[in-house]
Structures are given as structure tokens and as C-alpha cells.
Image 1 (cartoon, one colour):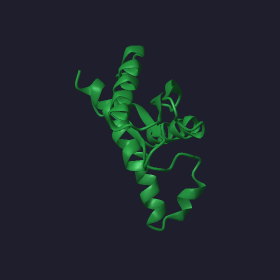
Image 2 (cartoon, rainbow, N blue to C red):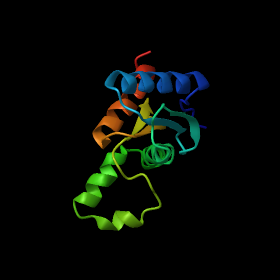
Image 3 (cartoon, rainbow, N blue to C red):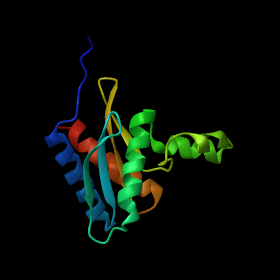
Length: 135
């Protein structure tokens, strides 16, 4: 039987807090979602002023990154580079802003952010992940 690392409730809080701090430092109104390795929601934080739809999009970006075991940006790039068959994949959040978290070679979850430009969403998501990996 294989043993693997898993996100704890404290990890999720730390990720949400760090991502929120990054967004607020930049003046961005976003929603931040944290999912487990199966794409199931563990935490969601919608900052004041974030569009209601960002709560849905952030979860889907996180789910895409967790299930695909790669940043959601990879799917966006494949589609933009002509692999339009990926549009039929059973994933919704195929836009940059979903970032998987890897520990000891295992994806343990992902953070998805929505509300600003896609690269800025990814910046906020990465800040959440970095806070836990550096602790």
C-alpha cells in the first residue's frame, strides 16, 4: 500500500490566507479555490468586489489543474496552438489560473484563482502554494 502526502485543514487556510494577501497587495478582487488531488473543493474565499462568476471559474481552474496534474494554462496553450480536440475534454476551467501543488512527486491538490488577467490569477494561486511549501 502506498502512502502519500495530503492537504490538511491548516494547509488550506494557509494557502487561502497567502493567496488573499498577494491579491490584496496587488489590489486585485479575486476568488480563490483550493481543491484536493481529486478536484474536490476544500476551501473557497471570494474577496470583496470579486465578480460572482469568479467563484465558479476559480473552482473549475483548480479542478482542471488537480485532475490534469498540470497547470490549467497547459490546456489553454494546447487549444490556442490548434489542438482544438481538447475542447471536448471533460474539463471546464481550461484557462490559466489553476496551479497544481506537488509534494514528493505527488499532486496533493491545486489552487485556482479567477478575477483578474489569467497570468495574475496564476500569480495569486502560486503565492498560496508557495506559502505551504516553504513552511
